Length: 559
Ligand code: ADP
Ligand code: MG
Image (cartoon, rainbow, N blue to C red; front, top):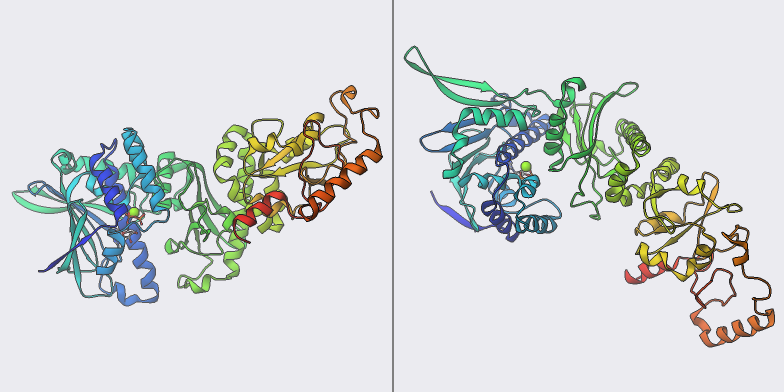
């Protein structure tokens, strides 16, 4: 048998180095990762077999098996799922396919250096976590529908080998040659409790194979370790928070605590179950240009796709979880899911549910909501211009930095504390809230104690021009509009500029004229203004024109 040696992608080598050389707080997660992959592989094959039944002909029900060989010091995890061919092995086990890989590895390295081992444990590194407990990993696999089998092996150094191998049936079998210090995993009770803790939610049976002495004879045993029913089909009252969390880790390929968990059944014209999560940590691909959503679609518990474009709008792409409906045909192809009316209706229901949950959490605890907003606010705000129907709802959920306070401010908060005579919500756009706060453009507002919202996310430039008002109060840029500022009562009337302080009109005219001549085409106009209190001049954007910030952004982007 000839084996070919290949090198891991540079990032994988770095990652393996961290995995092998860092002490993990909880090495049991290797089993969770391998079972999770086996379950995904069965889901994939089940789906492909819908349109190509030959792929499953003569095969047994889906199951994941565990086997221990105490003498050889090995554990095997096998599945009868989709399997891999040579190219799959190179692509999937030689590289890190996930987006944001580089950022991921950097973060992992930082955690490794900080010496805080418990931190690394949270990351979960998928297949590679097997090297936490094994010094050599072998993979025997055959892709469903193909006749050649393959053997992949690595000792977790910089290289792996691939060669042809006899593999009796489609699927994957992973053999871990345990490290000396990981022999605890040869104990059946250890495997059992690990599966129960981390993989109980897996919908396919996880079976421990073994032998038993009975009446002097050795008999084979097979013990199913998990509940083996789809978690979302179980009654809510029977699911523990830990089970929800483990399911979130599996389905979301995530490792953090979910910030929000919602499990519900929609009944009506279209029936579906949703089990959805909002992460508490920022996913790596949040700002990738594809703006992909990540909720998986199931039809009657059969996995269909995690790329149904109409299931959720992009501005909710931070959501993880599943939707299972019986109102779509089982043989629905991924193509048929484009512009599908049933899916559209489900989307409407999901968005409604998510926004109303967010509203409840915002009302219940502002600080807790701020934790969500810090990470996902910039994404949710895309909904203000992309979802016209729900614009006001999303605006209500939005929080902003402000010139007069340090925390997050809602538009309703702002309105509630507007000054006497103030009928406008003022905002200014820019990069940095601290710089904006000190901007000369806000001098007039500062002097009167008028609050100005500081919009510092790039996305703000896109929606702000299309939103004339919030609940009938106009939104205006403080950088281009000061009309109305005179009508607002200041903190102290004696502070106001008196007529005697003002320069005579003819002097102002001479000055502005001189400035205009000197500056020429560089400016559109030069005007006297009541907005300035300390600075002699400032730049303002034209009313109704592009904001200075947007202009700068477009210039940077080369437009
Ligand atoms: P992830 O599961 O997040 O994609 P992993 O490192 O766990 O990352 O796995 C990498 C890839 O290897 C998977 O996406 C899958 O394509 C492939 N893979 C891993 N285990 C199996 C398996 N048991 N059967 C088929 N493919 C697998
Ligand atoms: Mg995985």
